[in-house]
Length: 295
Image (cartoon, rainbow, N blue to C red; front, top):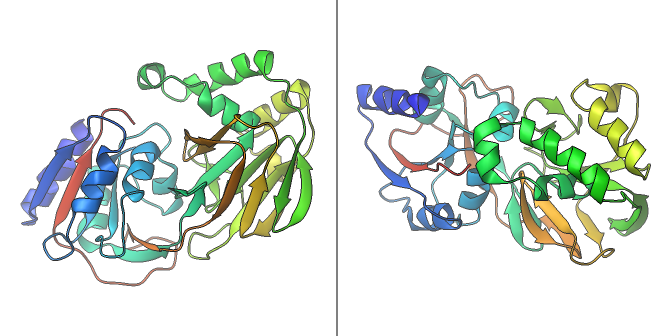
C-alpha cells in the first residue's frame, strides 16, 4: 500500500481534504459511492482494482461526483485505458487536475460494468479464480484457471443475438474499451466516449481452439492474425446454457441467460490532463477515497 500512502501524501501537500473509507465486503464500495454528496465531495476516488471500481459504479446515481482512480489492482484495465500511469504523482495529478470523460457503462442483467463483459470460456476462467490466490500470485492465477477450465469445460458453441442478429460463437467478449486483462488489445475500435459496444467473436469451439486463443492474446496475435471477428452493437442476448457464468470487469457478475446493453446513466470519469481520450470539464480539488484489500 506504499502507492496509496504516497498518493495521500501528495494530496495533503496541495491542500486536498479527503475521507478514507475501507471496504470490508462486496457492496461496500457501491454504498459508499451512493452516500457521496456532490455538495460536499468533488470526486469519489476508488483505490483498488477493476473489481472494486465495478462495485463502486453500481452505487452511482445522477448526483454522484466524478469517479477518480487510484489503481492498486492486478490488471488495472480502466486505468490503462484512460492513460493513467501507476506512479503516485500521475495519480494525484489526475485527481486534482484531471478532466472529465463521460462514459456510459454497459450492464449485464442490470449490473453495470465499465470495460467488458463476456460469456463462454473466458467467463468460466474468471469464475474459477479464487481471490485469495489472486492476491498472492497476481495474473498467474488466470493462467492456472485457464488450464483447469480446459480440462473441465467443453468449450461448446453458444448462440447469441447481437442487435437481433443470430451469432454462433464459443466465446463473446462485449467491450466498452479497447483493452483487456491489463494492456492487451481486445477490441481495437472500441471507444469509451462512444455509447456502443465492440463485440469480439471467438467462433471456433473446442478445447484446442480455446488454448490457441489464450496463447494468442498476450502475443498480440488475436487481431494481427484476424483470429477473431468484431461487430459494433448496443445489445447482446445469450439464452444458451442457463446457469453458466457471465463475467464483468474481471469478476463473475451474473449467470446465463443474460442481456447485455447500455446503462441509462453516464458516469463522469477523471482522466489525466494529458490523456489521449477526449474529455471535458474542470479540475477537482477534494476527494473521497475508497480502499479495498480484496481487489
